[in-house]
Length: 279
Image (tube, rainbow, N blue to C red; front, side):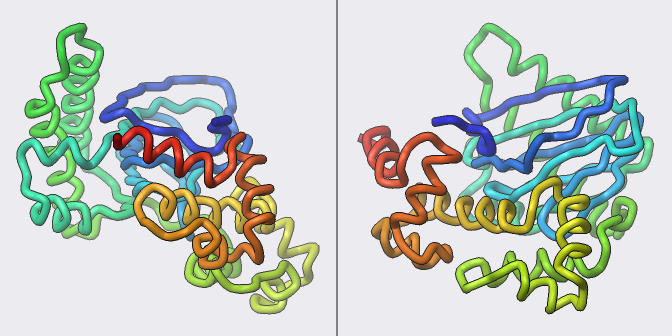
């Protein structure tokens, strides 16, 4: 699999990056796991779902599995951040399935701002997780789960205080368009229709959309549909032809062409691979 826009997560991954060079992701991407992105210093533009936020010290974003997101430097140069990816099932070491479901429902695609006290707690938790993951010993999943639970509890506390990150810098027309696409991806959607919907010329709308998301309208719509296909291939027993129709591809041939371009294999091959893993 090419994995150009999809990154799989094997239980847990912790990564810190500090750079004084501008870095713009070539295209949005997604994961099959949760991601917690924490800004320590500098500035970063993060796009997710329907929002594009300016992330500065103390700002946090949580990306849910299969949610499209990307990061850009734009007018900024320096940034220092932590990223944590984790498979939600690791928390089943200390939570029941019902408790886990209730917990995750409170942190879906959250943008928030941490006080200095809570940022220090976050940083300390990340350092402990990083040490555990890098350890040559077998992963202590219960200890990791306990630290993850502390992090998520801090997120919920900040959410309840309405401590949100800086407001979105994406134009309202783009937010409306993304919201519409996220709800109606399975329907017939065209560039002309979306531009008319927000009362902009096709040229102006296309320019605004790419500036906010990093890709064209058609590229984003295709990726959005493919995330839905990928999710259904992994977690449902639906037939591939049925999945193609539900995700907005007019035929399996069109889905296969788009899927192979991104993943390097066909949807049927991916489904077969996943079934073989279960066995």
